[in-house]
Length: 490
Image (cartoon, rainbow, N blue to C red; front, side, top):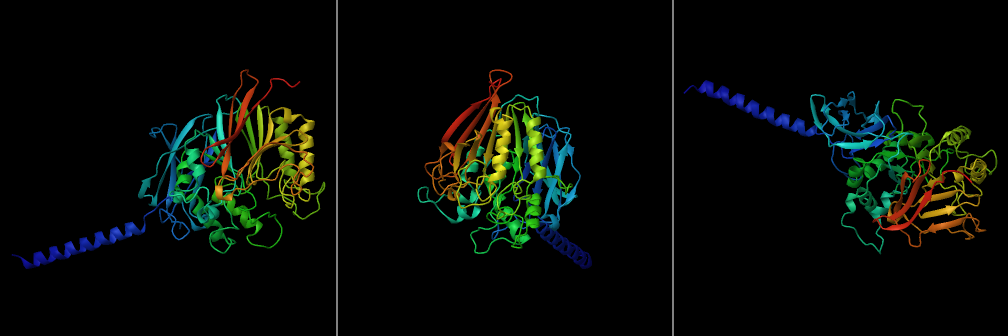
């Protein structure tokens, strides 16, 4: 036997074993995940923003989800099997953008069902494919198919994971996320609107508030890694607004040096959710979308342009800013949609707590601007032409009618542990001590939940029907009303 030959074979085999072991270790070290899944945002009749975040783990670890350097691109088309599909250009995930990869899909067809999936990995030569996600583009002004969506606020992670309500007790599935999301998963929804307080920078299970960029980002990571969010956003597109808790802190404005800064709050919101084109730093976060013939929605920005909260109320004080208010009026007058829904992070009718000073219902807040806007609405009879306000922020559900005739629907807090009972007309501690507001519904028991809105054609070509349904977090219908748009004004 040739001992030299055996020795050489042994060396080669040993080298192969070591190479395989090193390769396996390298492969394991470069494993890429998408622990927060995919998200679709700002769907129009011909475009949509899609995003994912590359992570080094597939779950929440010690209260965060670390990112990973890698590459990703999106494959999309109208065929679920991706025959004749298109690919977006490769993008690299970077620490500077929190390892988020997002892009705008353009040139889409109105009212069409699209499917997409992400190709991702440590390099272009070593990739895998994510699960199939879907969204439907808006129908546009000519579309007549019914549409159904949900409006939410108050997604308090800290209370949910740190507090049990006695009447509901511990939940075995708490790690999966909020029960209201499971309720939504059983519905046929066209989209989801988060009106703000999507995360809470100033409340968490641990002692310190989030004030730095890593801490702010962590709030979004721990929220969206919950499996029910991942599953929901795989098939339901989103629209986002921000309010005080996901801008800076409770009842914040743009002034002062308290961390997080106004600029950091704005930038983090635009980074973490698919709300603006990532290539357009000048993109506005107030916008309007024509969903179909019977529905147009307005999504307004309530934090970036406001005057200081403590400024005396009057004609010079503004929550929206002159430019946004002018845009809002112009686009409302230009719309011929059957129903016109202003979706606001904060209330305009209420009642609210009297001590607050940061919204349009508060006498020491921005009440003057709110009153003048409602007078303008009534002057143009828009409240008789399918105009309603829908708001977040408040931790209870209500349906109220302003003395001027404008009606408002408050979504209430999504998370049960974050809910409370609200102020009623005539309450001396409310913004309506003289009981001028007509409250058509308010919760009698505190409960998490959301508002579902369904709009469908009416019996005549000129009319439509809008159904507003309040449900609790477990799916029980608490209140429901329908609004029918008359063909002609009297």
